[in-house]
Length: 145
Image 1 (cartoon, rainbow, N blue to C red):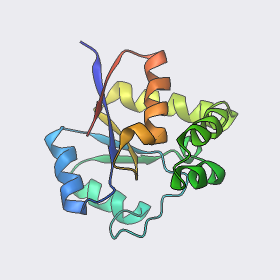
Image 2 (image 1 turned 180 degrees about the horizontal axis):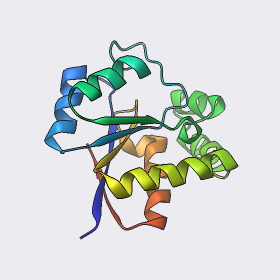
Image 3 (image 1 turned 120 degrees about the vertical axis):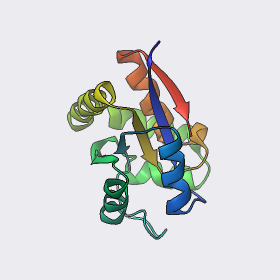
């Protein structure tokens, strides 16, 4: 049976709810795939989130090159998902993203990992495209939390 690879968005969640979902899924490592690891939501900026995860025994890695570029984020905010997908597909082909994909695969091979972004709906988020790209390289059981 393939190793699970989780995806999770924190939109509409408190830090405690978010951490509870990770714990229930027995996630060992969060792979932050936001281009900008800052958040207006308390507790979800990089340092605060990393500290909260560490307190729960969950690892954290931020892979900025796997985030959506500014133009893609703008398209997503305006509901232009197809445009966001095109922009993100180009991003995934950059040398930096290719290296980060290798890093993500290494983490997912060695732990129960979760790809983290903001959007609650995985279908409209770049993390689903990334999960599909990782699935092309390894046998994972993709699970959206």
